[in-house]
Length: 433
Ligand code: DLL
Image (cartoon, rainbow, N blue to C red; front, top):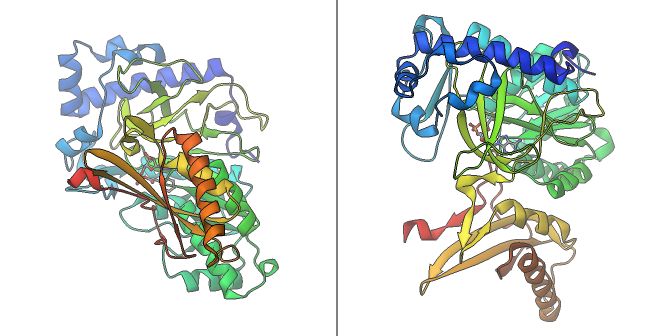
């Protein structure tokens, strides 16, 4: 099922035209109503009259996360506060959060794009969907909530945590959809197993997973353990929250709602546009929002875009899996390492649980990489030679994928801390040394 075939299946030419019109309108709106944007554009020597189609986007200034901090809390709003009906914020690791204001129309857009996602996952009016993303300032809970309401499904607004109750209600209320982070889904999968309730007694069929990077290998784990189809749900606070993009039944790339959020891929270092298919930094311009539109927002997420029509019938651009954020990339002894590469290897080794933790340090001026992995109950053994062989095998696999040799620490099942929201999988001690 396709929620909005007119918007999701138009020709590429029609889409470009529509995006051009909407971009121009947004540029006019921010130029006249948002002082920092007007100043930036004047400094760059451009006015709204210079923007006449999407190819002109390169003339526009970028917006960065730092801008959102510098103009905290409300300077980037393009409407009076009286028009703002909702505030959301992303926690950030330090200091002040990033704040986003929505008008009533913006909330309707959020519902619309969310509805496209949950419809693409095969959910509808008859389904109970358990939302186990956190509710509150974080956009996950309320974003998924509004999406399910828009398609007419039944929302079960659990928020994150309270795992036993999650399992009980999932069973008793017959949840068909589960929306949460992939790491929490893994936690729930183990808890379901421990509950002793046979899997056939659950109606769960669909997972709407996002808010953190996850790999194909992790999808395999989740689909197996939960007996569901696990779909990607992408979004970020600054742009709207969950609903910027979603997978379809083919699970072959994340369709972006590009009639609302115009994507570009740039070389993260030179800021020059890259060709379709090339991996670089994802940049979005919101082209329909009123409250806090952003032009050329640098997401720091690394991915590539693919414009071929999908077999599902949607013509919207597809994004490949987020490799990670530029900021998450670890440089260890000069080699670039993404946690997602470690995840892919850990999930492929049958003796291991799909949980891992990375510790990076600098000892005697040399970077060290320790990867902690959990051995499955059935394989955990006191027999030293067996464990040594396993360790050697993991070291070898990781070394061939990462290009550097890690120190593998085998730990007991369930000893790595579980997450109820976004997983924290790296401790880079060098940052504090
Ligand atoms: O995480 C919004 C969201 C909630 C998306 C629920 C999906 C589901 P932020 O807290 O602002 O917003 O974090 C946004 O999380 O720039 C990516 O780095 C990462 N991210 C979000 N979705 C995915 C995904 C929400 N599907 C940041 N795959 C983004 C990989 C993701 N990374």
